[in-house]
Length: 121
Image 1 (tube, rainbow, N blue to C red):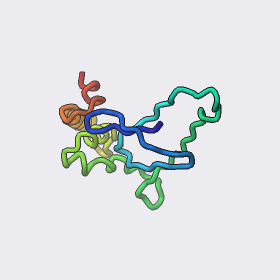
Image 2 (tube, rainbow, N blue to C red):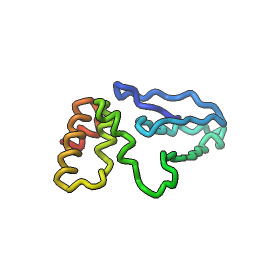
Image 3 (tube, one colour):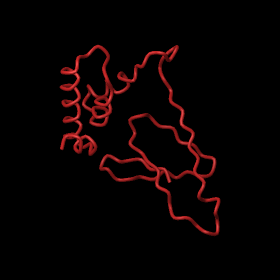
Image 4 (cartoon, helix red, strand yellow):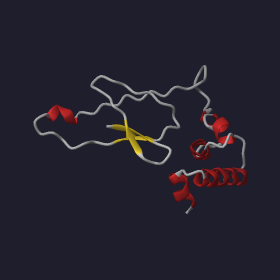
């Protein structure tokens, strides 16, 4: 089933029925766990995903993804800091980018984002 990660890193499964859909923001840590198959119901193994990305732009030609997590990262949200560290900022030289990425990743690790802590190790 579909699960989201809670603030403590635990998995919280969503109760979805056939035909249900879920929509979330890009900063939600989530995943899918395929449960054991009931051999009497082979159709229970079907999984469908339809992913639609929305972009706040008139023509979608320029990549503004570096702006997606900037505000919440600047407000101290650890998940946003980690996600913002994965986006390239246009017009920055390599030294500035490296410093920015390390600063954000370290802040995210201190804030409890496990992936950031692993990158810093």
